[in-house]
Length: 152
Image 1 (spheres, rainbow, N blue to C red):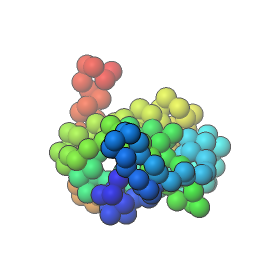
Image 2 (cartoon, rainbow, N blue to C red; image 1 turned 90 degrees about the horizontal axis):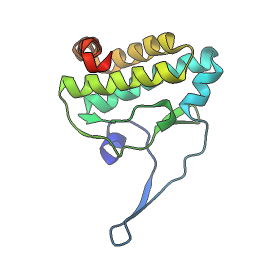
Image 3 (cartoon, rainbow, N blue to C red; image 1 turned 60 degrees about the vertical axis):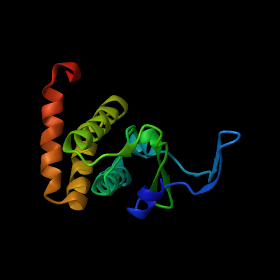
Image 4 (cartoon, rainbow, N blue to C red; image 1 turned 45 degrees about the horizontal axis):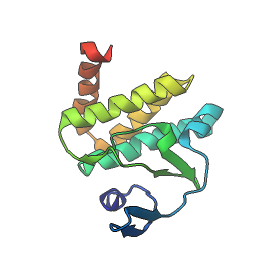
């Protein structure tokens, strides 16, 4: 999470990590989930969809894979998205890993939102803004991943 913050991604503040009691104490982030905002539709939803893509691009540019890119793991606070639940994430800058991460976002949008296609397009625009030319390889990898038998 510290590396995500350094990459320009809003994450909860960690107050304490207690290894003896296996506890993490962190900031409570108040606000609607991105899922809630997307469900309402309209211009605010499209703005959030684009911001999601930018944030995923920042993570990927920093070599971070979230691992669980669902819109329930994104909280909108003060018009900014706070990413939560990095428990399935890790460090990986391979195109394959980035493609799987982006594919998971596409699947999450498709299973939870009626306007999934337009939200995914907006997210890809944000992703391209952040990743530049490197986005093309990742987006091509998403298409390849979708063509594999286990993802159809």
